[in-house]
Amino acid sequence: MALRVQRAGILSTLQDLGRYGFQRFGVPVGGVMDEYSHRLANLLVGNSEHEATLEITLAGPRLEFLNDTLIGVCGGDFAPTVDGENLPAARPVLVRRGCVVDFGACRLGCRAYLAAAGGFDVPLVMGSKTTYLRGGFGGFEGRALRRGDVLAIRETGQDSYPSLRQELVSGAKFAYPRWSVNANSAFLAHDHHRIHFVSGRHWELLSEDSRQQFFSAEFRIASDSDRMGYRLEGPTLSLQTRTDILSEAVTFGSVQVPPDGRPIVLMANRQTTGGYPRIGEVATVDLPLLAQLPPGDTVHFEGITLETSQRLYVQRDRDLGIMREALRMRARQ
Amino acid sequence: MSEAKLDTLKVEALGDCALLIQVGADASEQTALRVYAVVQHLLTDPLAGVLDVVGAVCTVALHYDPLRVGLMQDAQTPFDALAQQVAQRLSSFDAAAAAPAVEHKIPVCYGGDFGADLEAVAQAHGLTEAEVIALHTAPLYRVQMLGFAPGFAYLAGLDARIATPRKPTPRTRVPAGSVGIGGELTAVYPLDLPGGWHLIGRSPVRFFDPSSERPSLLVAGDRVRFEAVSAQEYGQLEGDGQWR
Image 1 (cartoon, rainbow over the protein chains, first blue to last red):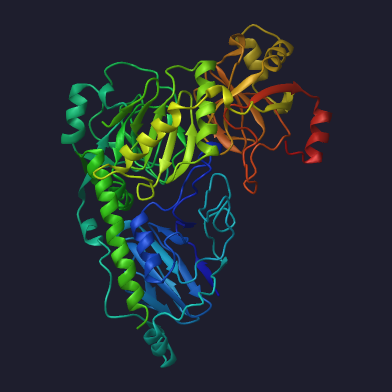
Image 2: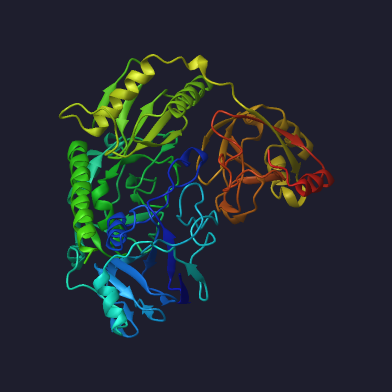
């Protein structure tokens, strides 16, 4: 089982839920930017949520499937097609051998996730299939996909969605059910978003004005934002005193304020430690939304307590659990 | 902000999936030893739900999965539950019982093509190149923490006479093995990376190996001494492909 890359797109890399357990060696966690879409895409094809998906960025790839393959696409809207016909998102799609799936430019959001039933067959490096470009390891040969690559897919050993298989036998190029999962992508259709935030360690170092502004002002995602961090343009935040911060661990969603007063939200490819004042963290449940916002979109922050943030986290997992069970039932049809 | 106070250790939230244990307040040797001991303790006997233990200058972070924290009382948040377990665990622990630090001898070929900034560093401090090398090879350095990149170890203990502020414009590519001075610290670049430190030499040792269980040669708390070698010796050592 495999797919061949006919066109690579801007940045198409294999990612999973991240490389944990090695941060003490300075190894970044990395992993998908939009964890929610990644997990959903995997669930659609019956994979473990820890399986790697292909993270597609801004302008997508063109992929030729060398075998009949069950795929799921979630996240940003790249208007993908199968041999020229629209490929519906947020549902399992069985694609016939020889078909070409073509992702266009992103119309909504900025990243899509392609899961293939069985999972992509690449070696685990430090327990993960996450691609770490700077270190040149993990994923597919430690790099982004290129034209001509053949990416192996493992056999699933499951006979899910027998009705879709039947349609292929009857001659269809691709087949999908007449339902989709609620992928929450509708909220991307605006250009201004509310992001929940829990104030943290160095919050009190901000001047009183800056503390107010942080919650009242709009911040625009700067064009030099990437998988490592989102730079925010808006009011310049000022610290009450110039304090030297001793470097310490940071996390996905940490908001740092460097000396220039322009906050940076640390994203999937963040370093393991940082030395700038850290005013707080974005709630983990809101990171998928932030990860889908392209440069130019604006956000505002709304403060919540840690308790609320953890409650939302537990709730989201419960919702995904319900989705997992529902899809397990559907896969028998 | 949520906090759980201990006698001397303070635990606070680092977002909803991590917490930070404040082990000391400064960059002293004593604090470093406590950080080292706390990290060892929490790695040897891990708490349920903890994914990563990250020691830094005076803190230890635990990254955790809120759904997998063990032993939660009713109405307790995952953070409160884990902070309580950390407090219990560390109330009865003996920093002196930690395993002794590992000591590494690292060969370095100083100057020339291997250390493009050696001459400039010497000039900046009114020293000869040989004096800079002598001052750099004298101390027994301590790995303060890892960060910036995989296997990048910040080494404390640099002689103040050769401390040099970082370059205003970083190089876009510093070759793996390069030995640099950045402010009051020194380090070896474990991979080809961008970097703004002054490069004074290069080591043939491999500092990072993604295929290894312990991918970084240096970990926090380790001791390092540099040893000057000739370009010829460098070539031989590189040919050996030696790894620690």
